[in-house]
Image 1: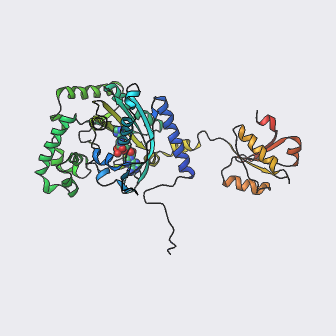
Image 2 (image 1 turned 90 degrees about the horizontal axis):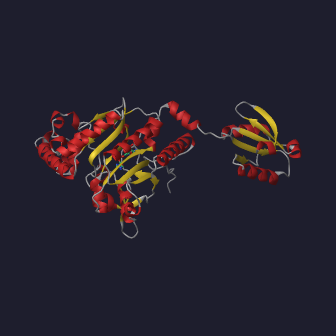
Image 3 (image 1 turned 45 degrees about the vertical axis):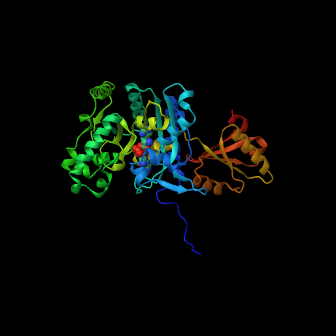
Length: 419
Ligand code: HAM
């Protein structure tokens, strides 16, 4: 039998210590913001029928190359979800949420997602994604509100990002564009990478435009752009949206090669990319409109927009000052309680319960009954205070409380303390 230690699967994270504190602090802040912006939380299962993704994201890397698939004991083909949007819209349709709620439906989620990617900074195989989805008869103001919300989240964590924005056209114009691109790139087939060639003859051809290496080639740069295919009405709509961003004082970069990696996008797409950083993982928030997915899954001619981010990527790019303030914010005192008097163990247990009932964070460590050992223990276990119960304290109904940072201590009546 092998004695080899079993470790965590590559690309997954065990959360503990400071990283766990950061994770909690970030998610609490984002959830509080979601409440402020009146989104409602939704949770869907970690796995779905694989078909949900393979049908709706057929040409995306997250299905072609990165999907975690499994066959269960009843031979069902399942997949760990690689993203939230398809599952959320599946649930919206299944539970008729659009019929039961006023529009737009405003939902958010914070869930683990799974992609078989090459693990690196800000890119994991299991990661926690937060996202929002808005569904209904949306217009430009809904798009603007969505962008404003994304920006608010980034500002909260002091991220300096550039908003990259593009318009992919509606279903019909995007289809013409894709056809033209396929024809165009076929002329240059011998100059394309193997990956790009595999993307020809599908919607995936769009990815050639934003591929890091391919986009350096002149013929890729001169490929047909969407504005040659979209209607005048759409052009005006996009132009207006950009003007409104100007009026709101939101800086953006029009990026005609921004196509995003998922099949379902049309019309507006956007990414907030860290300023002064050109790593592929420096996109902190990505999103856009996805009317096609809505039509596929709900059969309704509605509009939808959303975006997503990951806690992992946020953590990798937080600056030190913000990290420290997130770790130290709302840090409440943590009390280690010890008793020095024999036969007072149950009384101390009761005391700890009473303090907890008054919302103090307390741990009675019954194996410690020497102050110096207790101090060492408390410091290692990150307690901020030590509560010492000796003979005097029991008889006077007081507690001696030692502040471990300042090394000062005071004896205080129990009744005073809990007031
Ligand atoms: P996405 O661009 O695939 O879009 O992912 C959104 C964000 O999730 C990325 O910008 C990045 O911050 C984070 N992310 C993606 N992959 C990883 C990974 N392997 N490790 C860590 N973080 C990662 C979507 O998923 C769409 N569902 C977003 C959306 C919602 N569009 C409309 N509604």
